[in-house]
Length: 230
Image 1: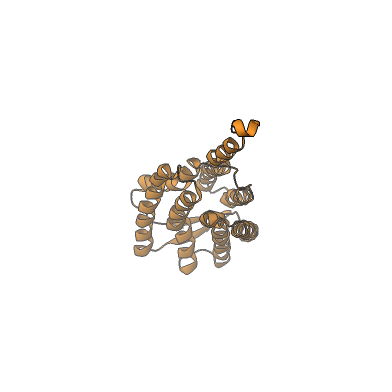
Image 2: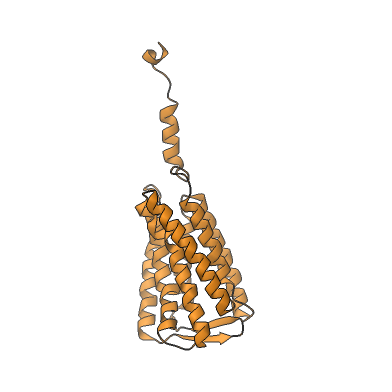
């Protein structure tokens, strides 16, 4: 969420551009397993642009409000943990199965909620409030954070762990500011996250894979045999 329609639209444009760049780099470098995570800024950018439309419409309910909720809730709950799992080396995937399972269960609950209730949006000066009747809110929020923030913190790559820390801290600050109806700042967090993902997609092939790098170094620095010494 941003503090105005203009801010949402500007942030959405920047985030989408970062997503196009990270997706193009990932495709060019032949890393198909990393594509869902590299394309995450495209989803975040679309989310901001949808909210810009909600600002112009004055909130309310309908397709735009539902689209915002679908992206923010069930879609991100499965996209981030499964994207992180796919992009990670095999030795790391077992520990990422827990947040992925939490994301699947949380997304199922949220999908049921969105299918059976009406979502509403209310413009409150510099914020947008959303009315969604989520059951067991503390439990669902815990599953959502485990799936999204937790999966990134458990990742093997340092940039992804940084992204998880930024997302967690940013979500806390944004939630506090939003609850006071002061200003919405999540779009700034999403923009920073998109730039981190772009940096991640531009990394050298072996960076963030210490096991593989160590194996290559070991192969190149083996003790020479008698024939080599000769």
